[in-house]
Image (cartoon, rainbow, N blue to C red; front, side, top):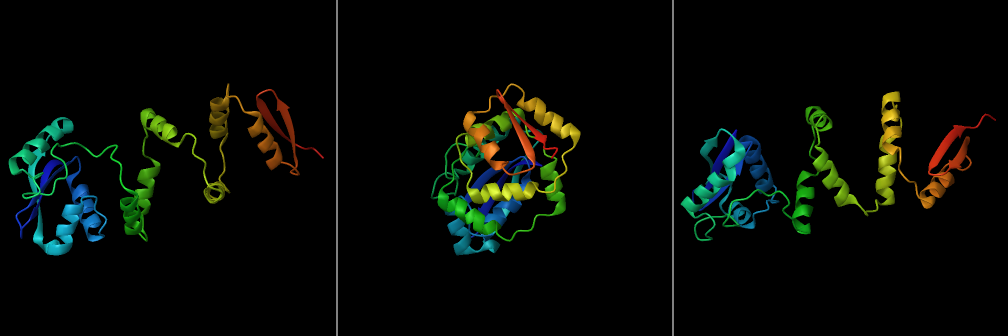
Length: 218
């Protein structure tokens, strides 16, 4: 359900106006983070801790048919209640906007990590994550964000362990081969590959930009 909603403090009458393309999911997220004391909105969190969960009520202000004007409608209700006025509400900003690209503090990220510790992810959620289609733009943004980053040895070991025993289909191998066509492998990387495979039953043929691996027949 696409909706504009209100979180009302029944003790102080202060309000928080929000919007979501999935109201039920967003409501659960609010309650989870507030209960775990990891909510990004420090004013709402402080009031929740002081007055208790029973003092708050979630109210749907408006249901939208599509999300195209969701920010505009959220702004309307923020202005209506003046929820960005510290005396009247909990909204941190006077302008409605989504949180995409918002930078969280290290302390907030630490709290989220602690709040999620021990949380069990169902098989259904895992399947949904595996089957999620990621756009090319999103893949590019992830690639750019990770460019130049060096994974720790512990992370590399975990990645290696997670891939052990995975059977690679011929189709998958062909995709990898096609994806690497035309790529230049730096000399340093070729040397590392050679060093890694040293003493293994494999013959290494270094030809230009290609590193061919052939099983030794001895």
